[in-house]
Image (cartoon, rainbow, N blue to C red):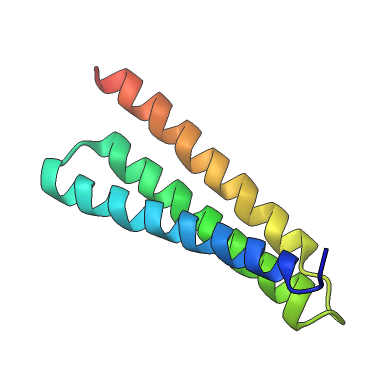
Length: 91
């Protein structure tokens, strides 16, 4: 594989996560369903994680952003899990 292939994959992952976050956020504003809000926040954090993957592996190779990426991933899962539990109590 060529050297630009990983960069394209990382950019597509970021674009997909960001698009999901935007679409889920728009749906939440229209419908008011809180689970859409939690999902939008989760995908927003995943998009930030993918952005740091791009920065870490392609742009700034001298610094290790592994901990930041790990915390963003953990935050995304925690937000979605909290949303599932919060909405389960309200149902």
